[in-house]
Image 1: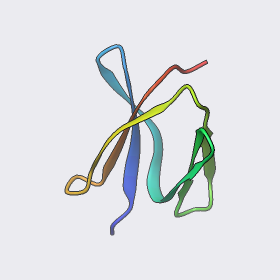
Image 2 (image 1 turned 45 degrees about the vertical axis):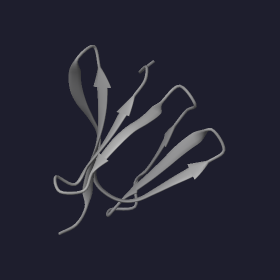
Image 3 (image 1 turned 90 degrees about the horizontal axis):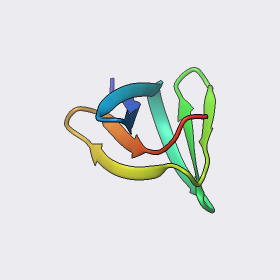
Image 4 (image 1 turned 180 degrees about the vertical axis):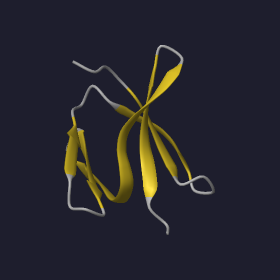
Length: 66
């Protein structure tokens, strides 16, 4: 499978935001992620895309969780 995992980097730790991500869209200042089950996650403008590791199928974001 080629799905990815969305990870939040916070205080030098990694927290899973969403598993099995199949689509990542940029909508204005927000990021919208969809997983294979149809779940949608909207990340506000407080989140920044840090990197995408294609080999490990991982998307890294930095930001604040409220």
